[in-house]
Length: 355
Ligand code: ADP
Ligand code: MG
Image (cartoon, rainbow, N blue to C red; front, side, top):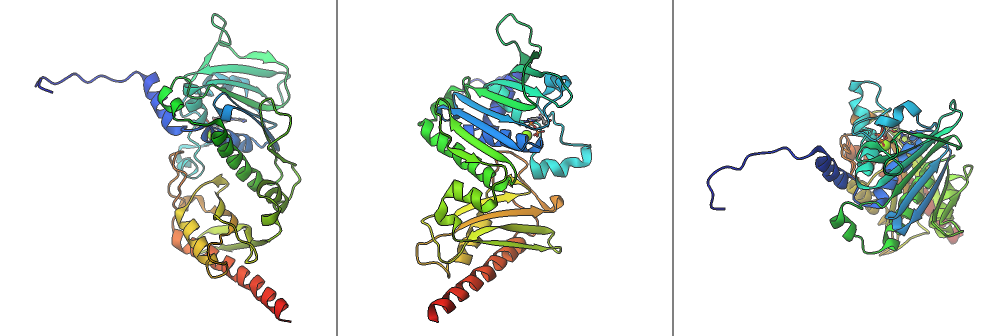
């Protein structure tokens, strides 16, 4: 504009800064839920129950049977950068690899109404606390914000209500609750396949039937059968390979050459975090191309464990896309292993049909 006089610089209000940051970290209900599932699994839970209303925008509730949260930690639970998962400052690798940055609950508390009910094994009751903008807040105006004793089972229940209630632009971006619910089912399904020996259930509020229901003792193939259907589950080959040179272990289940679907489906976990990798996707598609009819695509569940020192990015939770050291070598080694497996199945099939 015309004026030559500089405007004075002012600091933004910290609550505004936190709200902006939170809106960037959590852009949709499924992302909030992903963080909550990871927390529940990190807490050693063997059963997770998820309840969803209006695609997670009205209600997102996750109940676990994990270790619970110490009552004394409740006041700082939702402060930014508070975590129980880093033992020392040099533990920065774990931040990079697992995203332990103590930001998920803080973020959610800035853009939703958050209630935590939790009981540790050595507490004789559960404690319930409400949060607003990183701090404990009263259940009703005028009440004290302190945690209240309530009856409850060991574990933690996190209730997220009215997500984005104070971020109208973001809220308006959601067209349909059923699209959001489908994304929620997708992420729950992925973790349900990966987390062996953990039971999962997910349902819409007010409905008696569950969208997902997995028993703790279900095998990986059974989990895929329930999440992705029998067509996929009946045509799986399992694989497992490792290489000390590149410091990785890979295992999983992949469809054989008898099966193909319209779109490639990849369930990729790196160090037990669900991630995306364009590199992995492309290499898997190339690996399958010679085996499948034109237009046919595979299903692959791949769990990669990589020496934490080698995993590069994923520092920011919105970056689902990861990179790691010797990525090309690792992806090639895994795909070569899958290719050998596919070829072996394919040969025996050809052989069988010839004789
Ligand atoms: P981070 O997972 O990076 O530590 P979060 O904001 O996701 O950060 O969680 C903060 C802390 O809250 C965790 O470190 C953990 O101690 C505790 N916590 C969160 N969810 C649970 C849960 N379901 N069970 C037990 N503890 C939990
Ligand atoms: Mg977390």
